[in-house]
Amino acid sequence: MVALGNGGYQPNIATFGADQFDEEDSKESHSKVSFFSYFYLALNLGSLFSNTILGYFEDEGMWALGFWASTASAFLALVLFLGGTKQYRHFKPSGNPLSRISQVIVAASKKCRVHIPPGEEDSLYDEDQCVDKSNAGARKMLHTHGFKFLDRAAYRTTQDMEQLKQNEYNPWRLCPVSQVEEVKCIARLLPIWLCTIIYSVVFTQMASLFVEQGDAMNTKISNFRIPAASMSSFDIISVAFFIFLFRRVLDPLMRRVRGKGLTELQRMGIGLVIAIIAMISAGIVECYRLKYAQKDCKHCQGSSSLSIFWQVPQYALIGASEVFMYVGQLEFFNAQAPDGLKSFGSALCMTSISLGNYVSSLLVSIVMKISTVDNMPGWIPGNLNKGHLDRFYFLLAGLTAIDLVIYIACATWYKSMKLGEKGGENNKDQDYGV
Image: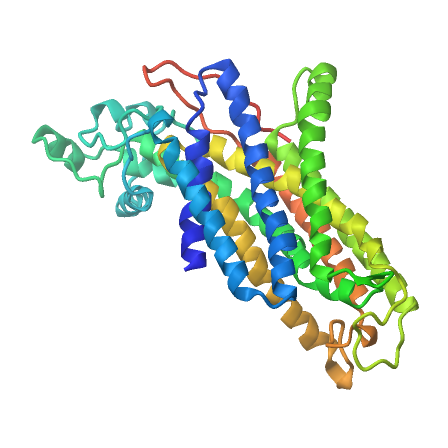
């Protein structure tokens, strides 16, 4: 039920919030960019409540009170959301995006043997001639020259011309150019999206191996024991700090020096670089934790004299990388997704985080399978003092470095979509280069 609720809530609330800003108004367009930063900040403030208040209830065994507190916060959020109903901007739904994508693929496949003569691109089926107006009101997407196979979906054969003369329209055989460009746009986004999954693997370590590592360190201040899971509060503080630093200092400074700010793709690349540094930092901390650990202990909890506060840099670096990667990712997918597929673009971002969890589990399984040969304890055994968690962190740093190289290639190859105004005039292409 929680997964179902999150799956319906997070992608749509980001898209719905962005829809409240008019891109054609310069002030509202700037506010829309800021919205994603503060939206991600709000998500992290919710996590701070979960890690502190609910974490305290869990440690004290007050599970029922924790569930009631969660229910109360969700109910309060619903009331606040419904309270602004009259002020919201609403847009007419443009139909099922999956069916629109499927129609283009099926139509292009049916005409796989059709050859489009050179110079015939301008005669492709235009949206203004389309009988189906389910996507009316959306900005028109102009024809681009990539993924030419998909252009067949908009090419009018003799059979198509006959059906159009009889006022018969089959969307599974003939699609307007704008609908074809929607699918091309998604195809261009997928390589960028795939490169973000490795980053999500790094991000996932905060809730798993970082906690295990912290639990094996010195967690006491006088008579008070610091829960290892609560160290993620430093990640949230880092997110808040770097959001305000970027919006109030770095971005205005870059605009003064360069005449323009960093693009979303550039910020995502910076996020990957910081993630590499975070994993190297975590690996170095683990090396020193092992150096000061008791090798013969049965349970590794608190077995190292190294203070848990040495984990603060890796949490802070992950928080900084989130501001560049996840906020930039939300902005990029929302800006580059077609008007009828905005929620699909936001869903890609959330799916990246989910897949990061699965890939992380798969990677741990593979590492343990390989590193436990000849009765060796492996890199990540139950007792971390007998393993080499540092090597796993360095492995993640290496994989992220390889991912960064691939990402730079994909971002350099990426071409932004060409949009027309609702009235037919062309928009200027925005700069989304690296």
